[in-house]
Length: 387
Ligand code: NZQ
Ligand code: ZN
Image 1 (cartoon, rainbow, N blue to C red):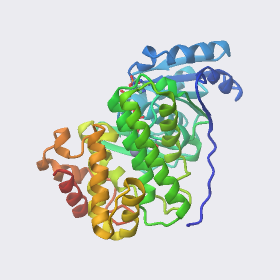
Image 2 (image 1 turned 90 degrees about the vertical axis):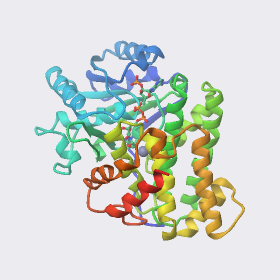
Image 3 (image 1 turned 30 degrees about the horizontal axis):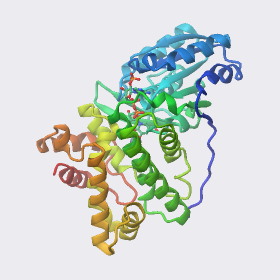
Image 4 (image 1 turned 180 degrees about the vertical axis):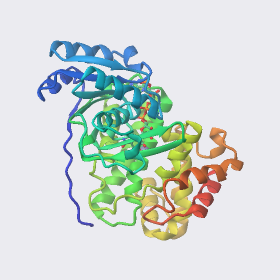
């Protein structure tokens, strides 16, 4: 077990009928005016928008709205909203949606208080030390953004999908009402599952050892798989939605990171380039990259991959046979729930691999913890992913 500090400052309110609490929570910070940020309009169809607006009104909180945040959110929308915040003197940013909206809310909150271009922070040229308070109503469980300080945004001019992370970006309060996710299309539930599993695996496969952390991680993965299968048949199963939602939150709120080596994150770096270049869903890209990465790196710590095969997929074998069967079982499960598992499945030809590698390597000359990856390694992983 590595040394660690566990400090998560987000107040999380979870359960049926909790969205109307948002107004009083914001009011308790003495905040009188917020930017309400949302996406393409799903919140207007499923009743979430009405609940939020009613709660803000009841608590005397003024708001201005910016909508149209798209999946794989873009920098130009962040810039647009920063201008609105400045003109309207808002005191906080309330994101109502999924990772794309809440990540954008964080970038906006930091951008309002920075005189330069907030992209500087994504490019590592500015350290974020302060931001407007962020509040979140989560409508899709996947990213863990509701309880972490991370945000990922695409600079559409340069086709770079990069991340920021700062303590001040943790939402002050996040609300998760699992019933708000009854309206999710099947593929979004599946992509959310893949993302949450991938977050768990990034830590699980970073070369660290801790029995309790391994057991927590395996439980999260098995539980997500189980709830996902229930939700594919019945999207309105409350217990499965609630279970899935809590799993996704704890997959990236610091709990599974404790005692680890910081996570590997190679798959995420490679995936972000797929999203940046082809605008595919983050979970879809991870389903393509993760099994390929596993195949490429398992020799770095075979016992952990064998453990994964046994504890997650009950593979009855030993050594390399178990490892390869475990990776195959993971891939088969991804395919079964409808995720793409190869570049071909999303129409990306193998001829594009050099271009993808170039985009990935803009993030740095090498990365990864379990195995340091350079340009050639990334190419090999993408070649496996293209099969
Ligand atoms: O835009 P609307 O109309 O709201 O529709 C959204 C969107 O089309 C829809 N949706 C959301 N809630 C819904 C709903 N549709 C019906 N009913 C509901 N209740 O779902 C679509 C996808 O939304 P999005 O916010 O893009 O999904 P997700 O939460 O998976 O976020 C993905 C983004 O987060 C980043 C990803 O890279 C990607 O850009 N990530 C953020 C992380 C973080 N902050 O820690 C970590 C992750 O690794 C990830 O990189
Ligand atoms: Zn992710």
